[in-house]
Length: 525
Image (cartoon, rainbow, N blue to C red; front, top):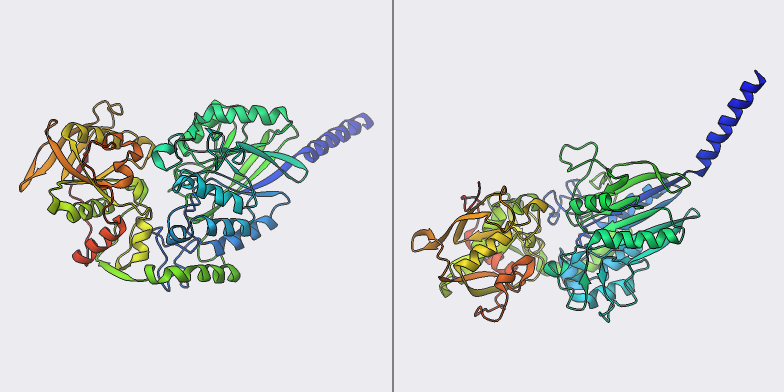
């Protein structure tokens, strides 16, 4: 009996020792915030006057202040990190660039973030200004910045922070195709994410760090590949694909966290609509014992911090004259959700392509091609303000007209549907041209067929040898989103047309109240 007691006591002692060795960490996270410092509507656009007070809106920095403070009280050890793309998406970025993002992130007390592709929209210099203004590390492992004066010796691949006496390694990750998506310049070269992450993991583990978190602005699919292809990573906090992960919603793309190769992968949609909260328990060797949580909805039940509301209102004053101006009216909601527009014909895509073609048709232009990545929000019915238009089209792109052969057009459409599985922004929204595509065919191997172009009162098959006049935006015309066939000095191009947002606003005004439509211009076999 006494021996049995000793045995039981020893077991209890061992269990107690194991419990004492465990380390609990709460990872609070955001991604793809896109300068949505004010609340947004269910359409991810600006919250209309009165709707926020009625509890119909989501997010905004003032709600995050409250939610993050409350979440920190639930944990002895917590960190706050971001999965990239704080830049671009509202007039706040257009006017202030990264200054408001830096101010709000400092206020919220972030511990680290990765570089998103949109952090390069205005070149390395604006990113450097943001980095100089924030009180936390900004990271990017899969790029060589040594030849870029603005970032060399400043932008680190990884860092180590401490919480509760434990060292935590943070590694940054950025899309390998960032040169196709933004403007990093010619001095930065991007590389394979798996090799880059493993290299930093090996370096950190050699220094005795056994809890490693990757901050990855690379998309849900790449995150799973990184998890499967590396050893030593514990958690990946994602971004870029605006993926909603959840254990309770039927709209989720996967569970929260998604476990791959023992790695907990999380992401919290976008625009500040959710605050991710992952609770992780590590054993003494740094292995995950448990990982559980759920993104917290930032709806009207989350009280806005009054001081933050007041500060954002102050920052909004120079913007209000522009964004509150009513420019048009819509009869119905216009679908512009990325999950739709990046894989098929969509209402907002038709509207934007139609407006582009309408503006330059008197110049003999017959075809419009718009990248779906440039479409950033839907639109609710009723009066339309310029602020809402600028939320849909925030990039200050201008209309570009150019010449290209029918062969080049088909190649462009092939590029447009080449990454549909990854829901990439190169998917083409079109006017003056129709086509079909077949996802069962390999990318760039003949997915596109039945290409018809406008001629007279109807459509005729595209002529590979004929030269066509096309309109797009200056980003795509200069090779953005993989449209390399549009770039070059031999296209008789003019890249300095009116701002695309102004073109859309004026077209809507002329057609109002505008009724959205689909007409089968893009079909799938």
